[in-house]
Image (cartoon, rainbow, N blue to C red; front, side, top):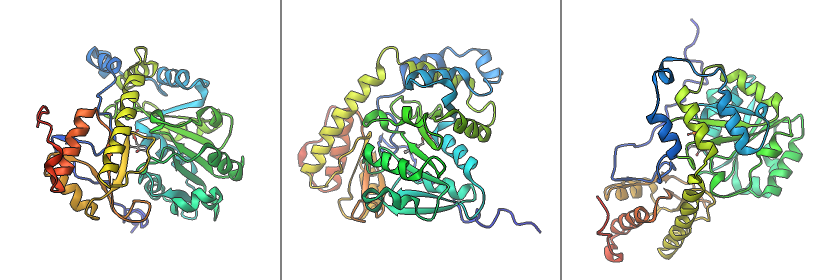
Length: 364
Ligand code: PMP
């Protein structure tokens, strides 16, 4: 009898967290300013062909839009259904068998290591502090792929450019594929996209789910050297991104009216205010260059705190043992300031300190 599923796959579980509707959901780092208006317009005007016909084999218009956005040649872009899909395709291109493994600095985006296991590889985590002190720690034992999230989810920390340079230098031109996940780069930080296209073993992944407000469309893309991109596209296969998603994401990338620049700038302003408000409350928020902030779980028990805050109508994400000192933390996604006040009110009420003044003007 042949085993099904394969033995190393069996222990994997479906991704799960509480998505019960709540008055304000600031738990998943999606765009609280809404969807890119130009993309919304494309969706509203969709005709018969948008649904009845297959899309481009490899989303050429979307590739062209992403290439123009990054200022790189079209041959240096691969597209996918969200950056999760891009990562999955890149991992698949590297996965040779159970002795192969992926290395990542933790805490980080869980899919960075989960995708290794899904693709039949091992996963090796290196504590962030150790990796930051010496990027060569990520290369120990000879991984086939190194995953770096920049800015990092859930901490919001941006590994310095010199650190990335040192990692790439140590990895070499025939070492592991180094993936730089730039899902949050629009909110702060210097992109490695143009540098990635000049190297054979570096891939930058990007998403339309955050700054562009298109998480529901599921579009992501990657930048790398044409030969690297070719390998990713082999794993991707044809007809992947839907016609409507391609068209909507392409106009959003052009961002002709500057919606992204405006909303990102408001998001960054809210981030600074929220950071100050959380510091005032003694919750040690981490400095963040992303659209979220990680702070100490007030009671020390992240799950209980997230449930408590949820009972006041606001969902935040609990992280057990993932604050840098190993204690529990909560992550809150940035939103327009009146909504951040709604979050702060829920936090204060939960902590038994309603005296900071509930915001009467806000809807439930
Ligand atoms: N990378 C990081 C760091 C993320 O936080 C996320 C989503 N939370 C993703 C990739 C996946 O994004 P998507 O598949 O929506 O593009």
